[in-house]
Length: 176
Image 1: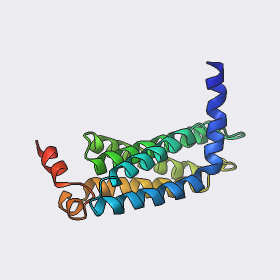
Image 2: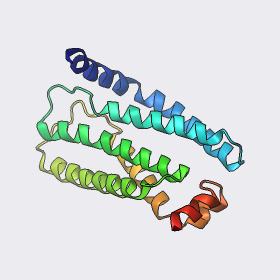
Image 3: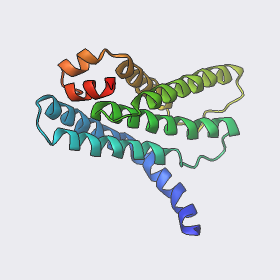
Image 4: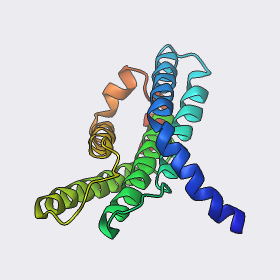
């Protein structure tokens, strides 16, 4: 058990340092998987599942990053936001693959990101938080992920079917 407690912060710190590179690579693979899926080739779904779930795991481990000399609220936001990113990415994966449960994941994670972003804006105005070791792209990444999750959730299913993001069978099974 002691090894697991020592592994979490080290892995979280490693992910924090390498997240931008890994994120770019995984997003390219996800886009490639979507293109392959749109061309109706079989292994596009496998590529999407592997790359999207890897990205979700990276976001999950990003929450275990150890920051020194920061306040408790800042530490809380640095842990909560990556968890919501992970849930959003998993919800997007579930939506694309047609698995049940995508709607609650997308709605809850997007709402949590919105609440945290509003809380960050108000606490930043009060000047009570010091932004010394916060990832500069924390807010931008949250806005992008939440926007993507909300837009995919509320996008008409006909458009997603037309562009082969989801299949016609998924649309039929969702109605049952």
